[in-house]
Length: 297
Image (cartoon, rainbow, N blue to C red; front, side, top):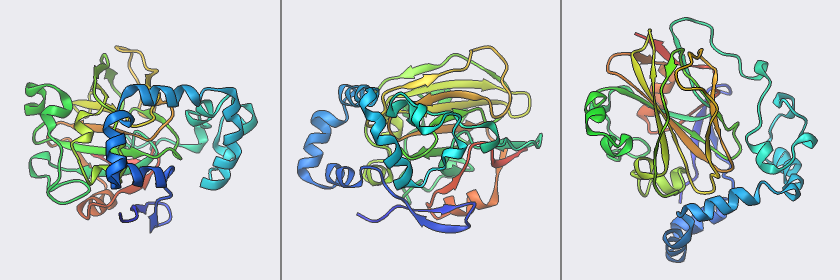
């Protein structure tokens, strides 16, 4: 299986992803024995719940410092010092200092909802595929609603993939009034490109949470969080019906890699040029929450 290559907006260069659990992931999705284990156990919620529970144990604190060192994280961004976390999971869904992720102040900007590797689709009705040409998930299956899928069939989409090494809280891309979160249950396959290149429909069938955000500037947007293998939970921290500002926290993932999706009504956003350029090459763009993904039309 090939390395995962993405474009870093800040370093302006191509980078090869350091995959957490790389050997186990490649065994699971690249061998016959691994695929048997995947369908027998790994994709099931009980496996991920157990793994998430194990990362809540106090003894996992010993994993924090080696993880920070191996993946080059900056403890200066954290609200708490590494030794103050009670478990690895507390470290995993850590909060950052506000100044570590400033929010683009321009009124017309729409910001990334999470740290991660991002792909955009300017028009879903003309999508040629995400990670591989010709491979795209089914929108109706993703949102679990035929009428809603029809409404956004020509809309725009942003997919943000969070690795285990990333900051794992997700935020609102624009100001507005959020609705109730709706759970769409499903299995918990990995959302790493190693898995998605084999089956892009994982994104549309994994356990996920859907919410509608009503805005004055950008119509009604669909915000979704997608679970994955070893994600102990998708936790919402916002209050339905209470107006939020661009960049406000929406929630967080417990242990594991995962993804968020933002879907816009047709003709509502012009994505930034670097995001479009990389997406056309089926290559992800790395950027932080709070930075611009595009401009409201």
